[in-house]
Length: 229
Image (cartoon, rainbow, N blue to C red):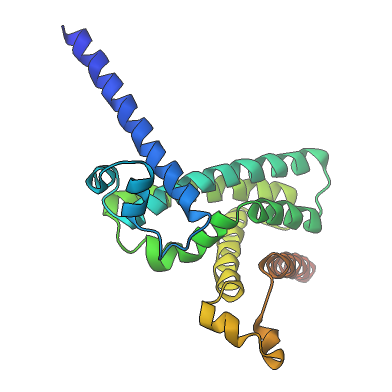
């Protein structure tokens, strides 16, 4: 009897996880063609033919839902970057432009993730519970530390812990540059003025240049420190 109850509970848990993932997948799909602001929990529920209240059983807020989406997208991003960095480390071709290209390509393939990263601190982390926020930060910490260690293996001028900090700096670059590259509609209209086009930037090229400048700067600073000691 007890074994039967456990089996039924396992089936229910599996069904709940499938429903939760279906909600995440549908919200992510809708997000590809809509802004975060215009997409509602009701839109997600309607697309899945669910009652709006059902979605809230799995995610208490819209921010919690999109934080779950961002976590899954970050998992796939880091998996790809880690594989690429491992190849670079094993090949011995420790070249700054190659590292930058690897990271930039992984971001370019995920414009939706870049959009979510840009609103992580200002929106998604503002209306969630402590447990959710803690879990997300520890997930990010684990990835920053592991991927950071791979960066340190590929770029010898980075010392222990500096790889993780470099990822934090890169994250800040993403937020700032995407905010400039994706302005509000009224600003897009303003930037049509010929003498204001200096404010119109392309995210991919600007991020690549900024990340290369950061890495070369760190390399030169470390070389200078070593000469002085």
